[in-house]
Length: 260
Length: 260
Image 1 (cartoon, chains in turn yellow, brown):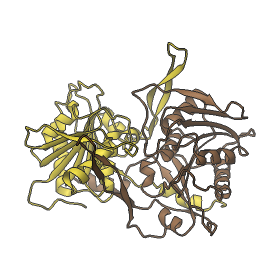
Image 2 (spheres, helix red, strand yellow):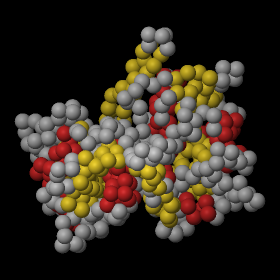
Image 3 (cartoon, one colour):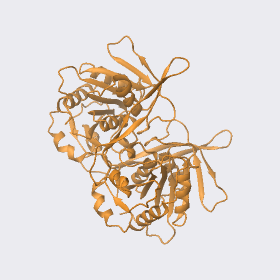
């Protein structure tokens, strides 16, 4: 467990993938400020669907904004993973006690974790040995209502600051969209084995050349009751512990029997 | 296991993240053509470090090239993950029997798997239930020497076509750079727990504004002998079975004890 044993306020680095101006990160900043010394490094533009992309072909630019506040906030031209790297290496020049990412506008439950810039930032912090949490709301709209999230975001963050996280593990937290009924509670789950079934919307441009918009349907055949998807559909907040070790350990022995 | 039981030649979809013109994919195409009906969908530009990025803000363009050949080859403006989606949905309109990606110019062993566009394409196929293999060479140069890889790429591909792969599992194959000594063989391994320690190269542009180039040192403190990194350092070809389920199952029970 990586715990924060300092008596000083913990340093909390905040990022997201919906850009610095999104309602989700503004909410997250407001919830983190009472919990620690906040530093924000976020992308200037929307970086949804960027996965674990990093910027290596173009130089990164970063500038401080929100100069009138009691915390530091920077925007950059990089991806969410770049934001974590810039935040720790260039801004803080040391590891923060916690990295939080989000609150994403839209689900990062189930297979979405793989495509998510929000969760890539969290995994990047985890690789670096920093406790990290990604928060997402099941509401894609940029006008999403975050009014019901405070209790869950604060409670989970306090627990991570208190307990730390096991080495190599970070958290993927998803919160149901606001509804008449308050979420029933918090459930620790596994990632549901669902997928996006793509259907390209193929069109012809005015010059007669075709182009394709990526669209898709989310399909979940994994109906077990221990998944994040099940928890969310039953109005619970889901927490999946996530790791960056992608080894399929259960497959190692059978592969060793192959005739190489 | 997903096996190819057809008596026809298996359909093999090929992609990469170094662009269609890279020596690595040309080599891979030449090695796959004797093994099946080859279809190539690759990016027009280099997509290294794109991770599992997908293109959702701009339309995808794709055009057929290599019209004089006995196989179909397309280039597009998308990421490696987009290439797999376009290849299956728009070009083939059905699932291929195998997706192969690479041969990457540079290692995708250890933590590199997370940042890799090559392996993102492989994971994407795996999510879709298609057996998939990523091949990488431990030589970053665009002039890399691929003369020693044939035996390993062909042997591993034949085994996957014959045996299939367990559900939810794909392969990350890394091959040592050419040297005086031939690789000693093939080892099935786990992902080494290493990381990149970043050092930004920060500079001032002629207008007096600073910018940052991402650079880094690869640091491996994981010295166990069952890792891909150990195998490669000892001149073996490494195979890591990889999964897209990121759940840290070992952490579920301890998290359930937290006070939510």
